[in-house]
Amino acid sequence: MTTEEYWQQYFDRDVFENFELTCDFFSKELPKDVLENYDVGEVILETVGDHINDKKFPQVFKFIDLLRERQPELYQEYFEYMDDFLVDYNCFLGDKKEAIRAFQNFLEHPVQEFDQFLQAFKTLRFYQYSELAELAVRQSYQKVRDSSELIGDAGNYLAICGFYFSLEKEYRLRNEEVDVDEVLSVSSGYDFNFDISLLNSMAKGLCARSLDVNDLQVVYEDEYENVLFQIEGNYLQFMAQKRFSFFLSGFFWDELLKYWFREDASGETLNERFEIDGSSFEEFIVGYHSWIFEDNKHEMAAVLWGSVYVYEFLFQAGLISREVFDDFCLIARRLKGKMIGLFVSGLWRFDFIHTWEKPECISEVEFEAERSIFRKSFSFPVGDFDSVKDEIIEELSQSGDLGSYIIEGAEKGFNEQKMVTDPLIEDGGFMHDFISSHEPVRVEKTPGRNDPCSCGSGKKYKKCCGK
Image 1 (spheres, rainbow, N blue to C red):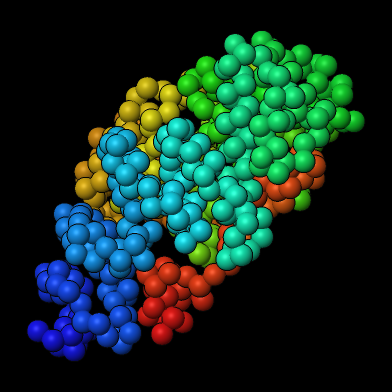
Image 2: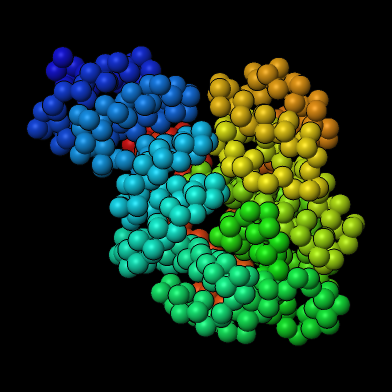
C-alpha cells in the first residue's frame, strides 16, 4: 500500500478500524518525503489518544512498543503524549520500576513540552515518589528557569518542591530539629528571597509539640504572616506522623492559602480565616478544572481530598471550632461526591488519594467503598454514569451521604457557571514576600492536536481552530 493510499484510508475510516493498518504503516521504514508531505504526528497522537480515551489499553501498548522499536525518532518527538499516560498507568498499578522508566524522557527533556512534564511530575508528587521527584527538581530546575521557550517564572513550581525537600531533609537529619541557616543555604539554589523571620516561625512550629492558640490569636492581627508560617510548620509535623512527605503536605497547605486569602475573604480571628463557605469553595475547587490548555483533574482531586487532612489538623490543634470543622466536612463530602459522579470512568487516574493514610474523620467503610469505586473505574467504559451505576451499587449503599452526593454529581455536576471560573486566585501578599510566586505557571501556547480546542467548541483542536 502506498503512502497516498494509506492516508486516504486513514481519513475515510474510523481510527479504531484503522488500527492494524496504522501499525503496519509504522512498522516499515517510512519514505523520505513522508514527514514533509504528511502529518504523521496527527496519526500518532490520534491513534494513541483515542485508544487511551476508549480504554483500549492493549492496543495502546502495542502501538507504543512498535514506535519505540521501529520509529524511535518519531517516538522521541512525540513521547510526552504517550509517557504521561504511562506514568499514570504504572503509578496506578503500583509498578514503581515502570513508572520511573516512563518518566525518563521527561527527566531528560523537561522543556520539550513543559505542561506534560509538569503533569507527570505532579503524578509523582501525589503518589509520593519522592526520590524521583527530587531528582527531577535538581536536574530540571535551571533548565526550566533559563529556557527561552517558556514564559514567566516557569521554574517556581519546581523551586517550591525543592524548598520542601531541603526542609524535610534538615528536619529528619537533625532528629526533628531545624537549622534555619542550613535550609537557607540549600534553598538558595532555587532563587528564593526568604524572609528569615518567616522561616524561623515555620521552624518554631515544626519543632513544637503543640501550639499555644491563645498566644497565636493575640499576635495574629499584627503578625499574621509569622503566625501562619508557624501553624504550617506544626501542620507539616502532624502530616509527617501520617507518613506524608513535606513536598506533598506542603502542596495541600499552599493551595488552600489561595482560598483563605482570595479577594473576598476576611477574618479577624484564626477561626474566621479558616472558615469555609460552600459556594466559594466549590468555585475554588472547580477552578482547577478550568485551565484551557491542560486536563487538571489530577490537581483538582489532590486539593479536594488533601484539604481534609488540613482541616483535621486545624481542628485537632484547636485552631477552628467544631462547627467550622463539621461545616467543612459536609462541604468537602458533597464536592467529592460530585467529582466522583461526574468523572466516574476516569477515577483510576486519581487513585493516589487511596495510597494516603485514611483521615481520622472518614469512616473505614466509606473509605473502602470509595477506594473500590476508584479501582473499578479502571475497567469502566467511557460513557455516562448510568452505564456503570449497577457495577457500584453496593459501594453507593455503603457510602452513606457520599453515595447520594455521587448520584447528584452524575445528574447535575458542578455549577456550569463555575466551570469557566478563572482559577488564578491571588495569593495573600505575604507569600510573595516569602518567594516570588506560589502559583505554578501555565505556559501560553497552542493546544496539542488532541486537546480540547481553546475556543470552547468542545471539539478537538485539530478538528476546529487547528485546521
